[in-house]
Image: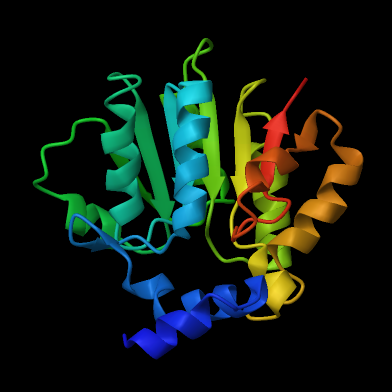
Length: 217
């Protein structure tokens, strides 16, 4: 990257930065050698939320290679050593990549996150007094996102978050349209036990606009 490029980048708009990151960096980001695919500004927010909620169960829907699963687990070591991280994906890549890493608190479920079989497996991990946080990062289609919101809304505990990733698809028109943000906008109308916590977007450069949903009742 040359100096002239860096000088010009200081004058980018937010949209220009987001499009640059999406095209050049987003899929290159790794954690401990595994693809993670996260906006670095959102990672800061995730750390704050994990410390605030101190969950006993973290559910990650859409785990790809498992890099973010490792990131979550390593961060949670500092907060709650007994945390269980459940990742769900249609493919078995995470399970294969994480195999042999000697984590006894990561549980990989393979299948459709909205199927009854997967839902039953998830619920079997959760005790009545567990604090549960959920991160939805799977298909990004309107129907799939809306399904996750409906199927998992009662699993997330009061005071915790159901985080819907990649509403940026709707904003930049780069993914399924309508996508995650539109699903949140329509779903939240009839689900007043949740609120959109816009304070978690204060760094502006977020991939999750309107996606930080806090359960308040």
